[in-house]
Length: 216
Ligand code: AMP
Image 1 (cartoon, helix red, strand yellow):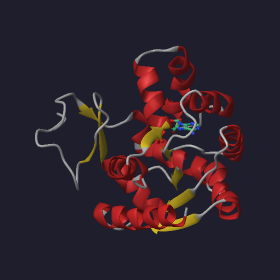
Image 2 (tube, protein in one colour):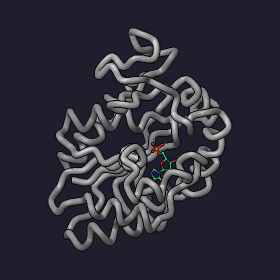
Image 3 (tube, protein in one colour):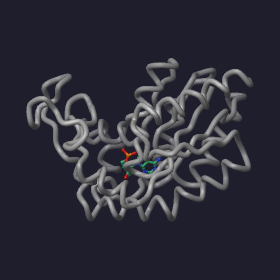
């Protein structure tokens, strides 16, 4: 089963994907997390990607598609978070899945007002060790700047600064939002209001996944 979570930066894709992956046994494939790990390791892909992430721009499609193709296995159960982000990536994914005699089963779009997304990114903090996501207002760490889970340093991501966050939202509107129309025509498509509490968003997403599983 292949599920795609679509949504602007700050809409809670990462948080929800982690919860759902654990609950339903999906492999969580988050291209942003993969790029951050590759950059930390200073691998060849990391070196190619780092300037794009820093500037809030998208990494070129060919690099992203190749990276995902190397990670998808036939028959796998995946929750895709942050991929695809352009029409070219969506078509690339369709081709990869076709070769595996598979297809996208469900796309859920997490909707959120731009102002709220900017507010969330400004207060978001991320662990440099395990990637756990915190929020200085709604979910602070017990000790300031220290991860509750792994004790590594918790910081604001470079690209969550206000100027870069605004740029990322523009990139989302220009390049990723068109995927809503693409998937409405191509796959089972649902929208969930991401302004609700995380527990309510999780309940809504779980209901959609359950009904898709039942219909397969
Ligand atoms: P995220 O953690 O999903 O917000 O992604 C952080 C950054 O990683 C993005 O702003 C892009 O620079 C890069 N990135 C992640 N996924 C993709 C993708 N599918 N296509 C292009 N760039 C990506």
